[in-house]
Image (cartoon, rainbow, N blue to C red; front, side):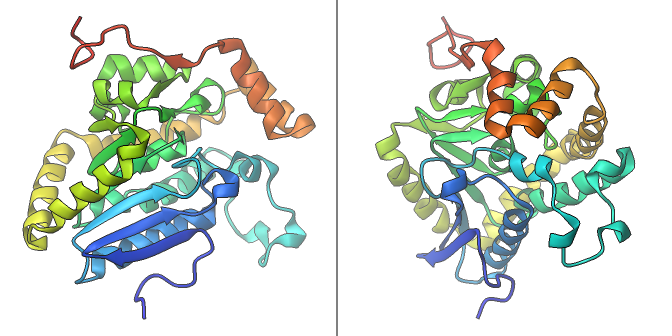
Length: 304
């Protein structure tokens, strides 16, 4: 009997040889993050952290993608009052103003930060698309491995807001964080490794083997030592104000949602008239080729 993890609609959970595998399981939606999925993911993380038969956690996605982002269709479409099991007038709504939006983003941030706060190490296994909310999850993990042909980015910075979990700066440094935020462009898994956004990139057909072998080796270390290693390094990051930045970025994302510039206004209008596909097409098409291809091809992005 699971202590934390109850019946799940969107998450798969299994334990094998001291490795807990938590899988985002909305492949028909490219594992887009819904409120339900985020809540069930939090339960799965707590379950794995609590289990004595688990030393390390692997987070991955079912189907073609790790996670294509937040469920924009649900977020922008809203829910009809008659479909709600409660009176919505009694509760906050992200559409009610700045403070309500900020409050909602902070609550969601608390769920995502579980990954950072767990005592046990978490490995993200990225394949296919890892976009927007997918990066919010992946970059909170302790180690990130990606397929070389994975697609990683936050295209929503073009019209929808700023990342509500800001670990781009910590991993890639200020110039590349700004470069990717300013344009919403993506990078391949291979180039993400060169930038430091992911630890390592491998051919797609080797990704599962590499992740499984890394998890196996980590699981050989006593769980108490793993916790000590993770927590001292994370505390060091907190002393560098990384955690304070998360609190501020949630608030700034709420402020960005108030923007009334032409691109954000057009995106909302396109969602209302033509739906998500039309809104994304009109948002992204003017940017043309949206994948950054590093010209420096040495062992790091700064080498010729």
